[in-house]
Image 1: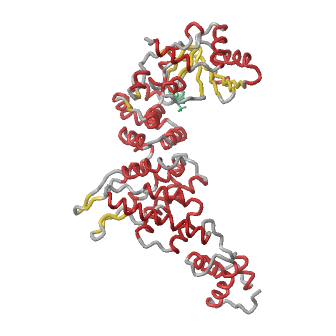
Image 2: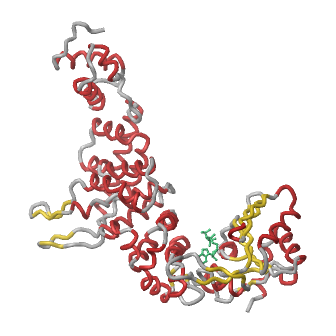
Image 3: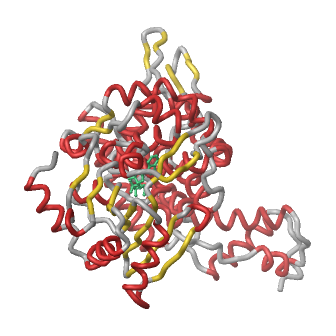
Length: 480
Ligand code: ATP
């Protein structure tokens, strides 16, 4: 089953001292022992991994205890009695020890009934062939690859396939459907056709999976190099409709009176992929995914204007808390950041179409603050037109916007702008109680600075405050 060449390669990847110690310990305990799963897969993918799963035909906890004894004080052992597993931390390595197990499932839970089993039983319960490969650690078979389902061939052919019947694999633990799609996105692999079809058939089973686990997988898809691969698979298998209907609602291009609009689902994915080339920031990527989420709710057809999506950015911003709550994504400052980018995502585009005035640039800087660079990245990724002339024009206008942003920020420092005169100072100056007029004066001072009527300086603001007070009929005779 196993080729000689492979054997050598495997030994090379088991050179860390820890494997020698596990090997000795397992031999002393006369137990079969293997390194298995993601670590083995990642050796072939040349993605060095620090998480090592060790399976032993016997007690994982006892083996971990023996290994820790041999390693001495530098190793830290944690035992999870309830799960029958143990973890040994050594340097930056985390080694999980578990006894080989056989699993059987009940219809309403993804938590199996577990019994002790053989290596074969253990490999049968793995999710994908590429994750089911094991390397023997016992001395006389050290480095031997045990690959009963052809995982190595699937790796070479970029294929995700379940080891046993895909219907049973997915129905037993439906999280595996999300994992399969996530691996396809992360590794740039294909779902083998019967695996794909079984996901489509078993999609409804996703309802027994917690929202948190689904969100974890979605975030891994979002962090992959080309998340569109994952979202297109989610859509094609029918999972998207169940886990993220608001995103699916973007799909489709309607035509009326011969006027069509673009398919906003595929447009969104193109924007997201483009943005991912510019940033690893998960939340900026989420902003990319959600930037047009308000479009289906705002879509109108107007005989004169054609298709419009007025205020879709504001509607999108308002939809985000509900989406985040439902999907168990964090409803904290990360969500607020996503909302902010979504609300503002039209501004640089509008700016680049019109004449770029200093005042508009100052307002954009003021509203975006430190997130201005992120916003610009999204807006540039948002240019997905197929018309090269249009793309060229937008790009050069954006260049101009970027340059102006830099110039104005250097000159006026409005990025983290705080109005130089506080409401408190306005009240004290004119002996006013807290009232709408105080708010009005404050806002007009801010506007005057952003519009370039006065410089962003205390003295100028104070003089302008006096002028405003007079205009608004405030009694200025007792001014301090
Ligand atoms: P990553 O670390 O990128 O998530 P991984 O494959 O190492 O990838 P883990 O979640 O650490 O993922 O799982 C380790 C191994 O356990 C997998 O390679 C697989 O063999 C097995 N496994 C994990 N989750 C499941 C599951 N839901 N069903 C079956 N096997 C699983």
